[in-house]
Length: 106
Image (cartoon, rainbow, N blue to C red; front, side):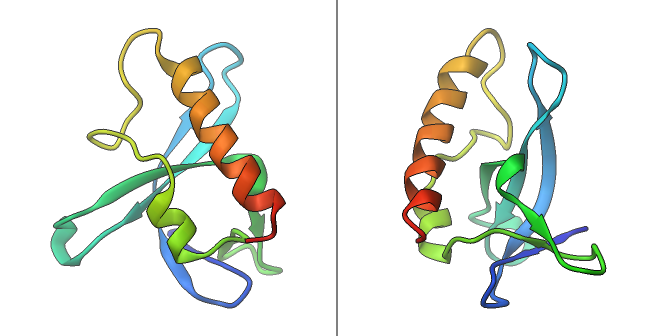
């Protein structure tokens, strides 16, 4: 599944990677790649896995958000979480952002 869209069928980016929780080993985030041609200006945005839905044929992931929410969302440096024990700090910031923007129906 490399395409990711919203319910209005707007393409929001592609799935670049996935992140598992170091404490549980379970899938925590999908990293959505957004950017210009050839990766110039590419942004890596982690989105909680639990917030995605799939289409009936399982070919597209759907996230109820807008392009502007993805633009404002916390991003990963170099497409990954900071090495070391910073996962929980980053996770809290990311989860807080998405909880506010997805709960509001934006």
